[in-house]
Image 1 (cartoon, rainbow, N blue to C red):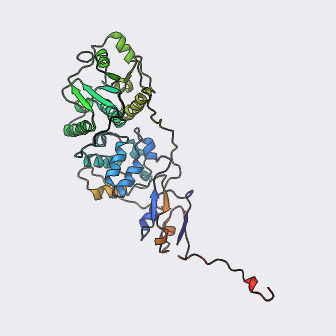
Image 2 (cartoon, rainbow, N blue to C red):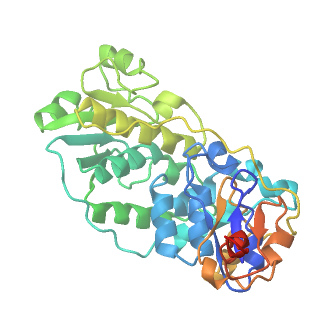
Image 3 (cartoon, one colour):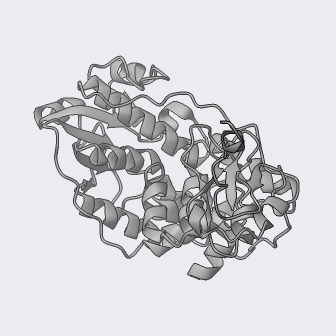
Length: 375
């Protein structure tokens, strides 16, 4: 029977799980080290984790894990430049896993789903100025933390640069509307036709009871007083605080022109900074090392699913099965089910598995000397 797996040698390639006829083995992806794809993702999405859920057919868990870092995967799955695929270990074997297509699949699958209203855990009200990717992302993360959030938008429709700068063919406006609807159901309030400096001033926002203002207007409105404009031009890159008390800023206003996934990552960082400013002990992200013991030898080639349209659950599962779970480790889930076929030991590329030829345990060693004459 299978006796041990050397975790130092195991690379988590999953080859043993594939060949085991009785499904005795599993891959544990809950490890401290990041996979190369996650390290390359500006938003730090646990790609290895949600692909593992897809592989297991746990679609709801996969969607929940994605949304921990990405508020609207149906949007980013269409416009992200997917640096994760460039870092994918499988790229050295055949082709990288179609992570972008799987992200879009998960996002589209749960577009019709209704959001569960988030409970209000804090008294502080937060105003977000601008409904572009930075404003929507900050509102999403702050609402998940339990804050009451109101988003103000100068235009009559929400979405900011997602609606005005991304072509309709690439990002259908119906997708934006559905994502906004999801956030309304979470409890985020939206107000349109509110231009900062005209219908909405910093003083009026304070008098309306907002404890924090997060400005994500892309560019500074022209109607602001000179002193306010200068203060908003000076933003701490770590905390996203301006020189005006209780006012934070983010998005293109601070970062300039960067990919949308970097805007989302910065908005999450700003939301955590706001929570700390308000006295809430939100955990800081700890630096994590990237796994070095990567799969390579003995991995069989599998064709990449190239189309991103009309994926089925089975198509997504087959593509997720191409993931090598870099940094994960195999473990013996059901040792008593092993039939001692040696397939896992023979197929293991890193020779990390040991199988004993007998299913039963050895009998205890008997000291025959005590049966000698005269003893």
